[in-house]
Image (tube, rainbow, N blue to C red):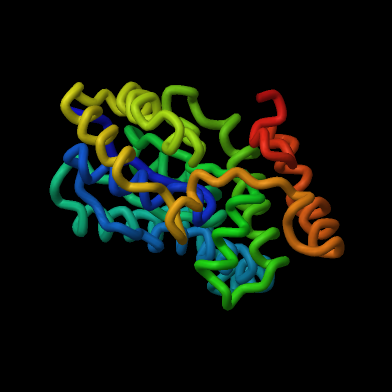
Length: 257
């Protein structure tokens, strides 16, 4: 059987929805959106804060004698049981795009040792233009910081994961060479040729993260976007991760293209 569970992670507007649709086309089961398991990270921070405040007050204080690690492990087990109950049919996947989900990767591997990860990525220029149209309630700086947080979280996490446990898929890969993108995912998951073909066909028909017709394949240049203060803010916030991933600031997309 193909490998599972598969966790699709990465910044919103980076092809995560197309990847989820691809998994469904290949016979996987799952929800179009997860947005549940990342709660473990949020709760973990609250637990840390609580025990920092109340966990060192001596043997007459209950919080000081509770084993925090056992508590965190027990809570994670509750999450595992809930997720397994709602995904009764293998193979299954989860799609959750936020930094908290990326930070949960070590816990996910403890809960599901056979898990594999697909990280959806996209250059910040196109990503933020798409975000601003899709999520106008958040301002420009928010989107810059959120993109950078996702990219940094994964860049720091991936060195701690075995290479056969993950694959990075750029949104442009899904557009420019959907067959190769599907084949790469197929190798990671051990898919049959029929499953790879179904996924490839889906990628060719379903343009990933497209807010308007043709926008998914449009390649931009920083010099043509926004005003100077916003361009400076973009470079300050997103520039380090743009360079770390090898992205250009011009229409080449990749720095070494």
